[in-house]
Amino acid sequence: MNDQAAPGATSNVHEFSVSEISFAVKRTVEDAFERVRIRGEISGYRGPHSSGHAYFSLKDDKARIDAVIWRGTFSKLAFKPEEGLEVVATGKLTTWPGSSKYQIVIDNIEPAGAGALMALLEERRKKLAAEGLFDDARKQLLPYLPKVIGVVTSPTGAVIRDIMHRINDRYPLQVIVWPVRVQGETSAAEVAAAINGFNAFDGSGGLAKPDVLIVARGGGSLEDLWSFNEEIVVRAAANSDIPLVSAVGHETDWTLIDHVADVRAPTPTGAAEIAVPVRADLEASTAQLAARLGNAIGRLGDRKREGLRAAARGLPAPDALLAMPRQNLDAAEYRLGQGLKANVAAKRSEVAVASGRLSPNRLAALRDRDRGRLEMSARDLPRALLRIAERRREKLKLASAGLTIDAADRRRQLGSERLGLLTARLDRAMAHELAEARKRRDESWRLLKSLSYEAVLERGFALVRGADGQAIKRAGAVRKGQALSIEFAGREFVDAVAGGKTERSGTAKKPATPPKQGNLF
Image (tube, rainbow, N blue to C red; front, top):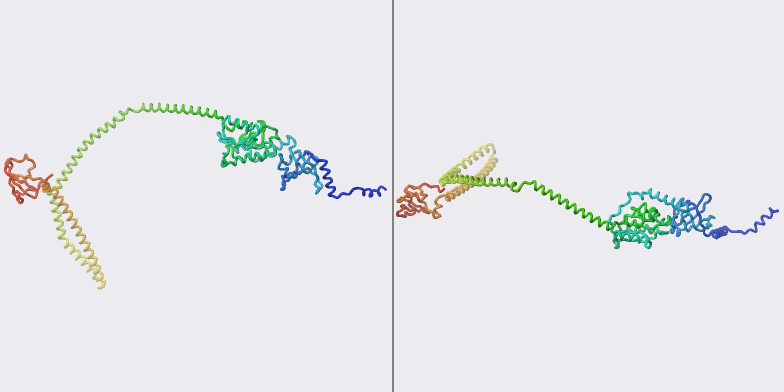
């Protein structure tokens, strides 16, 4: 009977459509679990979808629940989900009617305790170290005297005041502050943008590019300092062309930017001390070095001066150095005088010998000889020409004997032309030789006249001869009453008696005995 009543009983149950039951379940779940915190391990995370949403699962050792992070929420998360990370997700439960599954829509996500954060930090450190970002070979040296320092930190905290105070005390210079949030969702992006922005400076905007960067923050918990462990900040610091000093937290706090920075400072104040030297120390060191340099130069001058004095003492006296050259000069002076006298005597002998060869009698003999040769050549030249022409003619006859009449005529004609050319050349040569001979004769004649005593008479002198026709050269050789003959220019003669009367004999009168030409030299 119960079996028969069962179908009637089910007819009283309310009937739902699929959509109605799905949305009813959705409302029930959302109302019952409006906001929950679920702890579990991230599984199946492959990064954001192309739409910007993130889909993955949370699991423990007994169950699994789907999770979704919408695009607007994902960009604001301080911690991004990573595969295998144990997290605490905050959000609300809902269902997806399309597949009858329930899921959690996450609003916030954070590591499940400090242990999870440390595990994530260690995993990230190993990953970046494997890429070589922490290698010492990448690190740059800090400039000794920077001109501009860039500081990336919060503009309102005590950190920037400590840095400015320490720089002004040690070595005042220009400081450029790039204000950023050092904690929170956007902190990592702002710090990375500040580092990249300083490196992009080119000086065109009125701000000089910093020589050193300081990235600083005060102390805090691991969660407070987490922005400086983000990969975007670490990579920006590694790619910085400007030497970077990290000063995040206290001396015991370590972040990933400390590993990649060129220098790690224990505190922000320590970063300022590392970046700039103490001006007073520099001035004192400079003064000390200047004093040492002055002393060294003085000692060097003293040593050089002593060495110069020692070398001067080793040198001989100036008189001793000049004694031998002075003696050589005196000997040379004496030899020069003797040599000049000997040279003058030798030249005078040569002139006497040459004057003997150039006597009027010798020149007259040379002139007569050349004239005789010239006249002989003039007499013999026509006969020689006739003999040459006759020999040429005989050769032409012998050469034309074996030829025909026409060939003989041509041969004779060529021979006649050649004979005429040779005759003309002979005439020119003879004329040239005669002209040269006349020229030499005229030159000899002019030389003879210039050396003759008659040229001396033309200048106003007179030639005195005795009765024997010999020239009287000195007055002491004249005896009283001696007959003298005085010849003037133009061959004018005057007879006189020494100490007696003088008679003019005219232009044509000559001495009884024609005198021979004397030697004026």
